Length: 165
Image (cartoon, rainbow, N blue to C red):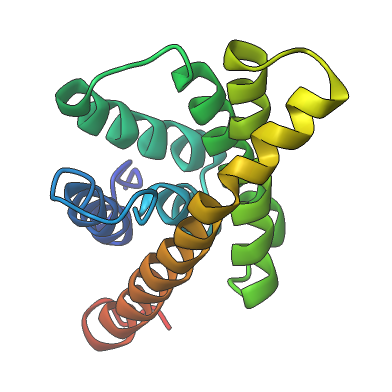
């Protein structure tokens, strides 16, 4: 009998990401969002690499359809894919993995901000990253909060309902 393309496990992973992305649509602290957590979660839990990249991108694009696309979006999506890559390579959630995802997202997206809106000098680059630090604090908090919620929530559902653990 052929294996189903979307299994119960896939459905649960997708449901967790869809629920998480809804929090982008509600008022929140600047950068306290589940964006990085969604990308990392998909990379960690989808065994199929196509799904690990495509499902989080589709979910992100779905929320951006409501929030809007901006010139910086290409860097956001690039960073998003890189965070998914981190998840596919580590396959094990950890504080280090979440921190690496957060840091890489910060570096890539703010490099894009520098290219778009700052003088192309070392001083401009330094200023860009320095002014972004308060947002990075909120990103870290959001990344740890949402990653923890998604990872531990998924583990609970997996053990209790999917009988896969």
